[in-house]
Image (cartoon, rainbow, N blue to C red; front, side, top):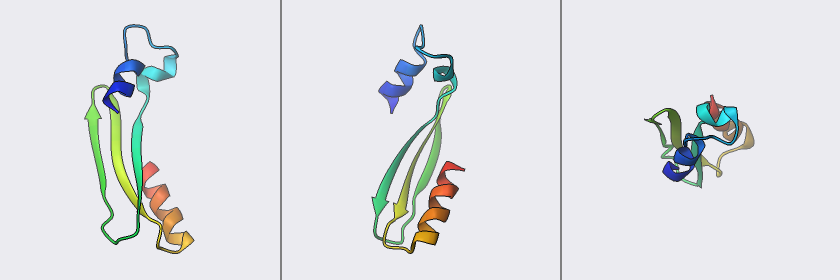
Length: 69
């Protein structure tokens, strides 16, 4: 994530949207311990989250919408 953010906000970003990009690592899990940590890697917002794939599809959809929210 750090290398990607550094590349995106380097001296000459490849695209104007690179300046305001955000990043997420999303991990699949099958336990009930959902995790969602958000942090700032100036100037980019980053997050790490899990989604429990053992749940029914409505709960999985709700979780995905929650973490990208």
